[in-house]
Image (cartoon, rainbow, N blue to C red; front, side, top):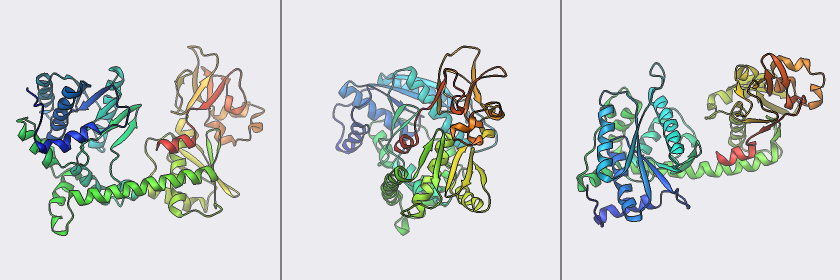
Length: 419
């Protein structure tokens, strides 16, 4: 397929978005996620144009979810287009759970994981995604239906880091219609996913609803502008949350201590964000707990001294809350001593193949000096320990070192900066 050296004027804005999609320095090798639909095919063609002009290396990746009979042939169609463009292309198959639950969400998470692994294997530092202005507007309506707050309604990030890979959405400010016009101008074929018209999916219903809101001045561009403003508000709230965390929150080993009443007082939303972030960090959770759960937590702690939520145990003490890992959430977690345990602990010491890391658990009672650590028994039970079969070798957080040390790989302040 011949790429024009100078596209029409209508292409200039799209090509500019491609050039500016990554912060400097631009990854040396870039992956393009392509499903075969119009949005991602336009993304691929635009990047092919950019690569031909700049000499920058790009490769394409298609994840075949196998959710529709046509998906395999569509992936092959992407491969044929890549061959015409002179772009390396790989197809990965998602073999995730297809039973009950939120299947689109599971497929999305599986896609990210597969693409990140592919990128690491091929030395690719950045992957571009074909999300559009219309996708953002549909997300806004869907989340509005779930009574989302500022974070949920904020626009998708145009650039972010996930699993060590930089991701970008160059076309997030451009409409689906503009991309299809581009494809028609360049005689590039694409496929339409029939599930886009399936009313069983919330996104389809949101897309249909959006078509009827124009009389009120509510179109994709208007929702995009509102979501962008909310993204700025979210970033401001995150900034002040970090400042208050520096002032009010204390980290002890893997626990966090929050004052029941902060002096000077902070707005309720900042207090909620501090609590949510604390729970997410302690649990090493990919997503924060839902607002409703946090609201119930506050009510429960007014009557009880110990409450569990999202894999955490929250203990009320005089003047403060201690958030620690819940032992039951980690009691079955095992890892080699050289690997991360519970996604946040790294152990150093005399590693050996017959050793493993598990939670200390009730064995804390066998350590006569555990109280000297100053940490509650519940915190120590959920801390990492080195085991050889049923024999406890070391429990560094509990003071039973035996040549071992345990360290959190990213403290709470670093977590707040990265989220």
